[in-house]
Amino acid sequence: QQQVKQSPQSLIVQKGGISIINCAYENTAFDYFPWYQQFPGKGPALLIAIRPDVSEKKEGRFTISFNKSAKQFSLHIMDSQPGDSATYFCAASGNQFYFGTGTSLTVIP
Amino acid sequence: DTGVSQNPRHKITKRGQNVTFRCDPISEHNRLYWYRQTLGQGPEFLTYFQNEAQLEKSRLLSDRFSAERPKGSFSTLEIQRTEQGDSAMYLCASSQTNYGYTFGSGTRLTVV
Figure 1 (cartoon, chains in turn cyan, orange):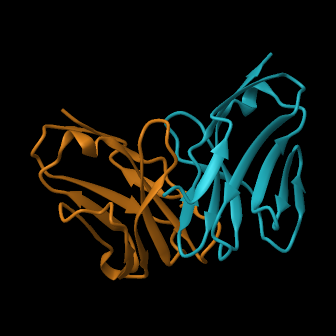
Figure 2 (tube, rainbow over the protein chains, first blue to last red; figure 1 turned 180 degrees about the horizontal axis):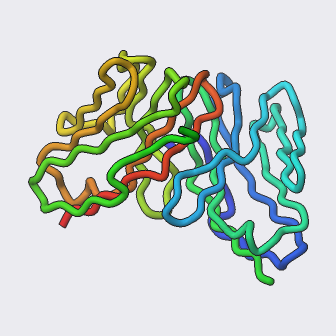
């Protein structure tokens, strides 16, 4: 049973555009929602995270939008750059992290 | 020590052999996690230690898998009688709380 569902599976965006990745969860006990960025051959690196008492969190070009009632959250990457090309994973935390299946982002120069 | 260190980075083994991986967490982190990641998938939880105590194990962790964390410092993950289905990236992460994991770069296992 997939605890966290992530879409799209892949995304191609022009340089300077906005990348949007969506996630949905079922377990209302989850209390922490991080996004991880992973480059080939590397482990995932924490990008940004949010708790359910906040509807939005922004760090630089990265924003998480959180909709508690819909049990959905999304990552927005503003002014996308070729260096942002990577795989992005959302996650939800209870006693352990449950990860989405990942989104492969390609930013075209 | 600024990160989580995993060794080896790559391991190729023949089916049926035993393999052992090592993880050195960030020194002040008392929580240590093992995850497995297959191609095109997100990391899947295997097991979790708080200090030297193994507090949770996934059903993915068959009896061929064993993990230890002696003295609450480094951890080892052993796979006995490896199978081709064990081929994956094995990730270790550590944290001080239930949040904000720091992952290592992983050990890529290939079973031939």
